[in-house]
Image (cartoon, rainbow, N blue to C red; front, side, top):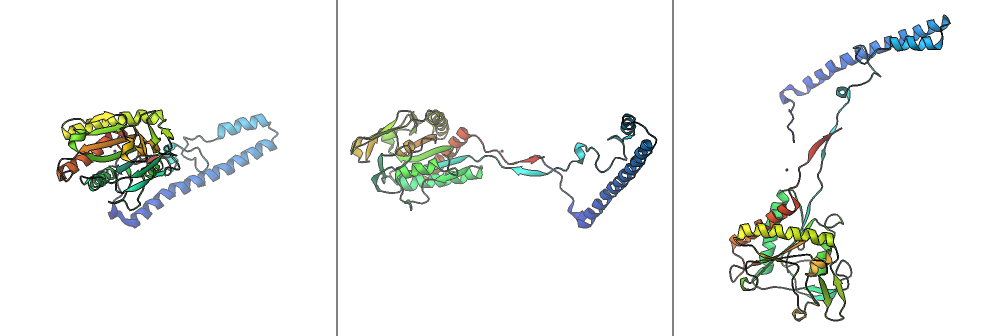
Length: 330
């Protein structure tokens, strides 16, 4: 989350190191000389036995008896090696990365377009702005959480890199980023970060993936559903972890529910009960957070820090700590 090894004394310098190598080399040369001499004697013995007409079986027995053992100090080059004789090479084994996709909501105001890939393929969605300083607040929370998670060893990918979003991505395009965040593979967790009026969401809300959750186009009635049961199960478990950690920071738990209602009257291009970003990234277990705004201008500085810390702890409790590199010797 690495055994210590004794470091060489730098005061010895390269001269001492070369001296040690010379001392180690001397016994090796002596062993090789003894092995060569022994081999010549063995060859002479075999020649004498053959000249005397001794049978092959007898010669083999003589050789077997005369062969030096591995315990014989005269055994040198070509002898059986003990574990201590085998050179050991060590290299650092890197743990598998844990990839976190953070989605600070909004950041653009875009007309709905039809998704061309992902779990929401065929569904219309865009992106919309928000009041209460939400886009700026949630981006600040995402940056703070990203810094702490990276310090803890996680790999973090953001759905946008500034406020407003310089890439001007739709919701389904952000979902595709999460679906491919780990070198073309899905992120280990997706975390959306939003705020809303306290009168609307109380202590806050958390949404998770649910099989059968859907979006339907308002223009043509086309429907896409969430179908990945494994992702949905993890998403539910992670949502409960976030509920616990947020309750510890906020003082009371936010509500947890499978998705959220998006009525046709909102003009989003599609209606249903799951956020587009979650529907798109069907291999990413998602935790969609809403936190109550504490001032008319949004979140206070203290609550921005609290929200970020709650996000970090929620990720850690869901994915576990990132293991540190450990030496592997062979």
